[in-house]
Image (tube, rainbow, N blue to C red; front, side, top):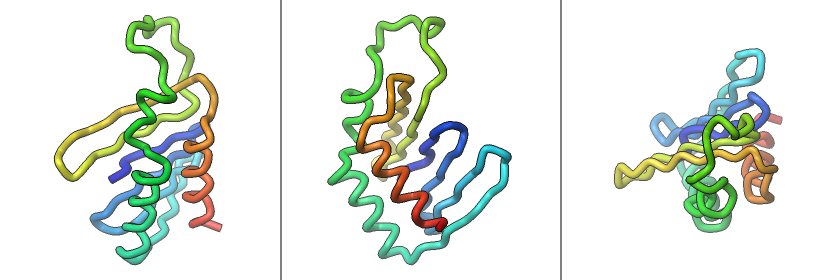
Length: 112
């Protein structure tokens, strides 16, 4: 389950229970897109298998030995909670990788 994806202070929460996607806009306004469980499942599988979100921490985030005081505000962050209880937190101020942009674009399309 993708808990949050954040870009420029707009965030998305993807939840399997209940099956919905919530967009929280910069002004705090909430919008909800309710998807059939089958479609949400496809979105989550695409995120894991095609976009390989589980590697984003290693592929796109800064090294662990960077002093937190020297780091800029992140351009994006993601928190993923897997069904086995594992939690993965990722963020980066070093640009927007293609996979991050693909996911954000797919989520934004659900609200058009």
